[in-house]
Length: 194
Ligand code: GRF
Image (cartoon, rainbow, N blue to C red; front, side, top):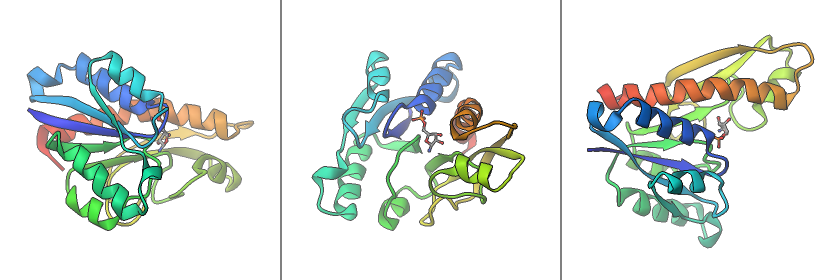
């Protein structure tokens, strides 16, 4: 079985979209793959409930409990590796990862970022796109490398920026596309690797 481990920090709507795609698309029968665990760095992440309700293993590794980024990442990797993942999926996981962590999962670590990379890496992407006068925004699934939001692009989706948009309306429009491209990118990975 190819195990997928999903890391979240909050709502987990991308994680939920992947779990639902796995169920609807019969990934376990067709691809020999399953979402084996959902891990959060925040104990109150809403997405943990969704995963629990579906019988998916959940775990919390709180970054505040560790003295350094390195120590947190080591504990997180230890928890992830209990599931021997074929793929680790960052889905709204709001932590910057150390080079050692990224190297450990090289070739099997995906992230989704709510902009058309390489434009607008980092935070507040929607407001920055609006402020820059962009006519289009979007989302990018990419491989994770040691450089923030800069790994090879796997999938993108484009949405228009409409007159009157604010960061919230734009984020909602982008998010609907994230829920389409992220499950698709994960499925493609499980079919053939990166
Ligand atoms: C998404 O927009 C994702 O691209 C960004 O944070 C948001 C997480 O949403 N990194 P959710 O937790 O998947 O609902």
